Length: 521
Ligand SMILES: Cc1cc2nc3c(=O)[nH]c(=O)nc-3n(C[C@H](O)[C@H](O)[C@H](O)COP(=O)(O)OP(=O)(O)OC[C@H]3O[C@@H](n4cnc5c(N)ncnc54)[C@H](O)[C@@H]3O)c2cc1C
Image (cartoon, rainbow, N blue to C red; front, side):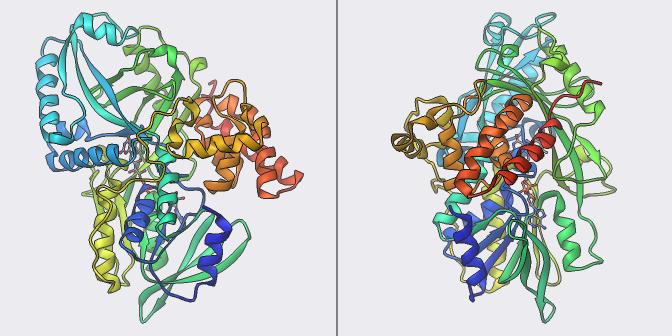
């Protein structure tokens, strides 16, 4: 996947693309894969890096949503469970079954959650992972030795999927490219072109080369997450805002706080929220919150009350209380929720996806979740075919393997998420054994991975490598800053950049990563 090749294709192309997609998160990348797999010509433009927005900041669950079951939203749960099963089969290198324990501190919670999880199992049908069951107090403690044991009466165990969100995004971009799409990062859509009042293309600013160009399209899909209203207003200045933003934050702790394989799921905290503590890449992710915000940013930051909520509740359910100094990273993400009513209570807003078509034919895809990205893509491309007068083709993605697909066990832990690419990464070491060194003694990643990111995964900056190709930023923000010079030097060599670029990269990465360190106030 080479940026210059894709750029040449979209800039030189005289043809009119069947479908142009704006936004390189789960929604946009999923749509690119679906459209390209049906044989349509596709170009996708992302203003920053793939998954720079919400799609790298999730809880990393491929799930039906136990919370939506509580709300009685059976159709949403059913669709998500179906998609959970498909994604587990289509990207086994990135998605695995994760056990969750709901600890019970009152006598009634056992039967209540036990029955609820049996319904969850039933809904999953033959795509179910493993059946849920009751746990005695002893079994609960065996599975989660660090669980708060005061008043514990037992638990319920169930299974959901877990994945690496930004790695899946990169693999989707690779899948789309292999199917003939051009997917470009660092290309911002700054305007829409129109013919006879209908959208006929997009104006793109290439941030790397500081140039503008226009691409013609039969249909344009707006998949810009919490920014969809900005693009809708580029289309029509008077367009009403359709999105409410809700922020969710997570903290990352060392594995010692949850040493086993099982995760903790608290369906209802004292103030009615859902809380997860989940093992991930040999660390623990704890979250999340649901805080309505009036602002939107590509780099959201946790509010003090959100930090306090997550840390206080982590202390409540873990025997050893995590202190601020134990927090290795704190990250925030923004949910794009489609407005309903007065839009003040985000927990009640639609988590389902929406497709909205403007008068000029701009198609906006928003809402939903990572788990259902494939179905969202199928629905939006069905619409795009009709609107663009394209040949109707059957969706191909239900059982389509995603780039990296393999069922082979990859022994080297840091190469597991590359799936089938792990072999090719190891091949690179034959000519350059010195690249087997780690990028930092306290991180699992090797220098050879950075070379691979630059050559095959369109990594353009130190942040692309440390935040999304590897997950160093999330696993340990401070240590990732120390790794930045090594990464910058490898990237500079691979991308033909000078010492000034290297310095600037280290500075800007350091400034960014400081925002992921738990504040000392
Ligand atoms: C805290 C939190 C936890 C979550 N946990 C889960 C979970 O565990 N499981 C799950 O299934 N779902 C989860 N979700 C939901 C899921 O992450 C989102 O539904 C999904 O990532 C949204 O993807 P998207 O592509 O619509 O938006 P985004 O990922 O935000 O992508 C939009 C992209 O558009 C780009 N863009 C914006 N404007 C322009 C422009 N003018 N030109 C070019 N590009 C532009 C942005 O840079 C951005 O990269 C969670 C969400 C949050 C907030």
